[in-house]
Length: 233
Ligand code: AP5
Ligand code: MG
Image 1 (cartoon, helix red, strand yellow):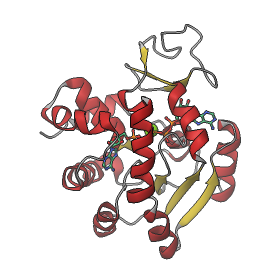
Image 2 (image 1 turned 180 degrees about the vertical axis):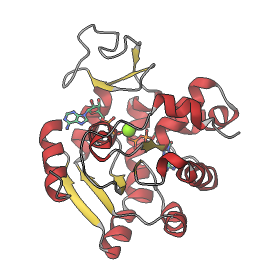
Image 3 (image 1 turned 45 degrees about the horizontal axis):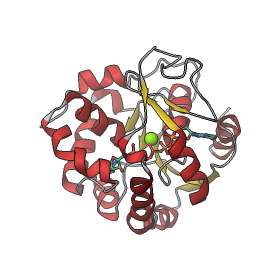
Image 4 (image 1 turned 90 degrees about the vertical axis):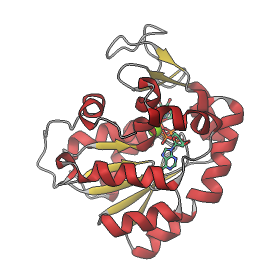
């Protein structure tokens, strides 16, 4: 049932440091399609921390056809959440890994109050970044997203299309539309976000560690805003 972290680290490696920024423990919180994964790929090298996406871990398990992947596939494709027990155990194990001792970006976890309370018991988070974006932009982003099967990069049919149409510019892998980016699953994910995940905004605001960023502008502007609110060079 447990994923092989060594295989997973090949898919989501800890990037080499090119800056002297202190590592941090961050949560990226926000609706589906807000750009959490896209920004995490840009920010993780700056901070020299691993980007830990529970969605990407589940998708890697599904692609590998592992017991975990078989267990979660129908749930994820429908837009519902994987159960808290499975998800919390997965993250607790990942954070215990040596590569996560100095810092990390948690992308897509926690997603329920139960997950947030569990995380409070085994991690001290520096900041939670709340990606603010209206539903209409979410629908545009998700319905045009193309994901590389090989490296996982998120392209977009209009905003950032791969030059070669059906192949990833970075690694040549095939790009595809995620099953949970179909219209009915997008509606379900937005509803799940509103009812189960949005309450975490107050959870972290009350702890005094929430920062809001406007996720609507282009990626470079969102990155600049992120650096400004986190006081990064
Ligand atoms: P997950 O993979 O986490 O999906 P999500 O939260 O729904 O978020 P997305 O990955 O869809 O969006 P994103 O914010 O990363 O946006 P992206 O950068 O790709 O989870 C999938 C599923 O796994 C869940 O539904 C659930 O079933 C399960 N799961 C995961 N974690 C769980 C948990 N903790 N508990 C229980 N179940 C869990 O960008 C989207 C698109 O927009 C891309 O095409 C991109 O190119 C484009 N884009 C991004 N930024 C910009 C921009 N600034 N301007 C223009 N286009 C942009
Ligand atoms: Mg993502």
